[in-house]
Length: 526
Image 1 (cartoon, helix red, strand yellow):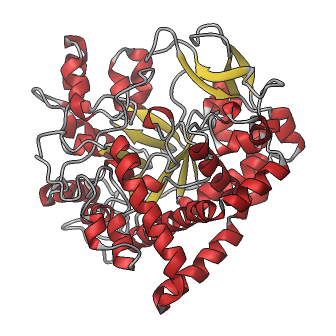
Image 2 (cartoon, one colour):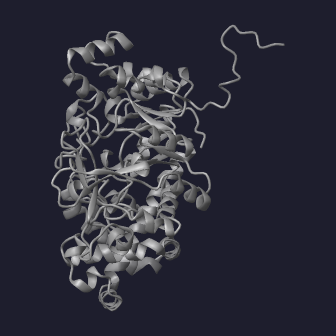
Image 3 (cartoon, rainbow, N blue to C red):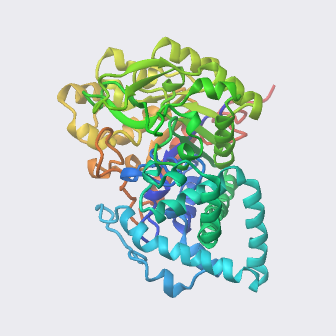
């Protein structure tokens, strides 16, 4: 699919400086859209919006289809009349004000679980009990009923999974009592009858997420801003997806994984990365016309304007690790579904706005699959300064079918990376962009923006010139990730003006008249 020449910012919703313990879809998200518009940015990239799993990772979600309730704005629910201001003000961090230089406002997932989630359930109960009390909520109830019909393919099962998870105090569904582990129809029917209100509350929270996300999408669309979303190739073992569809995954007779996903030793880890996700039975999926993937991609394209496929190389070949192995060293490459999957998706859904995350050990076969599928790939400038073999990550080697980054959520911030780099890297950077002193951030941003890459996306931490304290994720490190949060007042007018000036001069402002405007002093007459 052809993309416009444009620029944007990478910032996950949880990193917004919202009121409360975690960023959400409320006023702070809309303020960020206004900042992007002022900076003539036309892409907002987010990480997966799914409910987070182990380690708070959005890439280890409890559902590939559901939205994360933590991201629902209580302020918006208050404005809807679902909950009182007194109750929302009781939330820890409801009046947070952060120091611009600090990281004291880190996303607090524990507080979101312990303090915010009960308020969300309270608001859902209020809506259920009083939806018909006034015209506005009565209309919302009609929308809710339609939402349940439209999303029934995943919504009901997810609601059961979420309630059973609370009931048995674990998301490890293989540890549930046998009738629930095996999805015995009678056991589920009896449980549903006994827990009908809890199930409806889960459905209401998903509806609420959808309403607030759709409102934010409309606000972004008003300014010509497209949401670049992210889906992980694999799903979490502790998820509604595997519980509902065990036949689609490599599981043994006890429903435990036979082989799991990961990557071999690489730049990030000498022992590789043992992700632990169960592997797909691609032969079964192929026999079914890849129906589950069609449903997943249909959902993704309903949420996002552009979809980034994380770990794209796994569609060509994936690293399969015996489940008993403690590291990823002793795995092997197995052929993936390749072009057959993408043909099936296109046949079912039409041309798709996809971006391939093609970082890591990329073979000619992976590159061929990306090109055949018509997807732009990714380049990361931080990778480009190590040696000549890394130079494809530098702007002079880019091609138009590229999404260029200074760094991603898996990298250190550019300032942190540069501070920890050696003299050889410093010399290479200055040879490329000129003297930078101790701070190369904006010089590298300019270099990326000036390239031929159709899309350039800059992490918000780089725009704020933050160091390693603002890193979002360190691959292969289990704890301490995903908590960075932008400080209040971060989206300053001078940063927006700087971005807008760059967008103008590098033709990333999407100005429809830009190509026909005459240069100063140029005679446009015939």
